[in-house]
Image (cartoon, rainbow, N blue to C red; front, top):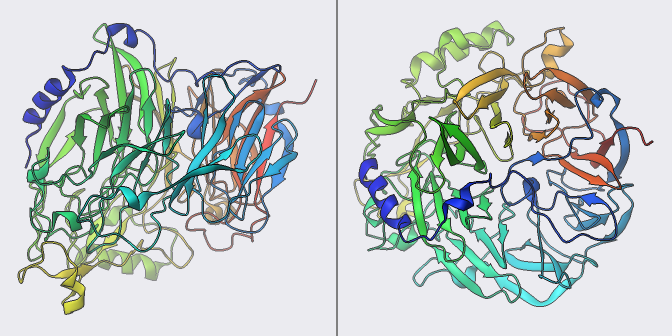
Length: 639
């Protein structure tokens, strides 16, 4: 195992070559969204996915306040038509809103009225969560950049037409010797724009015999490849020793499948990564497996690694890092420190000095249970932040069984707990079955954190879905044929997803099923941890405070001290007092909301748009059929 002290020394050496002035840290990078040249109208936009390259999910607008938020009303709606329910985070730039329609095209809207201006000529799949805007210095060239059926494509932001001669197949940059898949390398990750560079991560590939999930950067104007970062180090590269040498080019995973953050002032891309393949068994990949499950700090201009921290060694639980890191400047021990904050599926908050990678609070390597699966070499220790406190429950015992399922189901859950391995957070998957809590679809996921950079607050939406991770041996010759580093001592395994869902659609653990947690990042203190929304089934029984089951609605904070967040389980969009979590306004919807709101201003009026549609993740029994998919926009009454 790579020692963290040696790693930290390497960080300082890598950073010594950077000419980063202290003046760059005198302000708070990401405190405001990037500004664009003024036009002949008054607007404040939401110009990139999650509000800006910094992923802050924060708006400096303050027209809507705790005093008047109760007056919010629907200003307009835009139907997306048949197709997938929208999760797309709209962007608003130069007086135009861009959304994704049900058939996967991009539509340009008047953000004040919702009137459609045009629909793109695109065909094929587009990243489902967001899109990137870029413009030349003089504003004459304006593009929307995205993945389109595995190709880097761009359309004219004023017409929706493809930019001629701009199309790059992500497979073209795969290193020599890699497995080249026949299908396009498509991902829901929208990537990021930095200066004139589009940065994007390849998807993770299949379980056995895969291509590398490298991070690639392309020239926005020409499509030329600028740099590549090898997510699974080639032999001789830094981190190479954390993988077996044999079949190095066939290992996969470690991909940034969801989202990442760019600090535009420091020129650093902060990229959280996923689990190596196979997700639940790693007997053929002994070692820590860098750069899986890591927070990577890369020079956005060159792709050079500045520092990294691996939050899970040799992942066996699918505890990837799906949430974009957050940037702020805190005051600790009388000093101003630029930090990057990474939340996780397994319920932790990791905070680091943005420049050096040094932890803000100590992180301890603690012993964890060993694997009992033949060939598996689980890491003997894992990193545990000593502060802040976790935002999720990290164990599941008989005392935690959901009392709102039938007595027969409660007894069945009790029996599973008794028969399975259940020794805490990092109990390895096993052939008899292992309890994993908060589970690989629990904790914190894409789009589910926001910050208030002025008040130094972090807001986390989380869910708790325990799983039963049971490995099933597959000794068929064809199962191990394409397995990297295979040997007679290593078997192929499968682990069917088992979320322990009950007959009424509830999870096995007692409520609250989800939480909204706020931290003061100057001190790391938890300000509050409250149920996030309500349970559909329990609401019908008059039971409240249970939390929405499996919410995937992202929060947005505003300068006026509000926090907006939707919950799919009870189909409600709420405005809360960010300081206390108290609900100040709510609006009932007829379908789920599973995306991040966009907050913007047009003509002196502040608006909030959210995507609405579908049942949401793990809908509970009895929930009515959802209404039509659409974007719903709220504002104060027009004056």
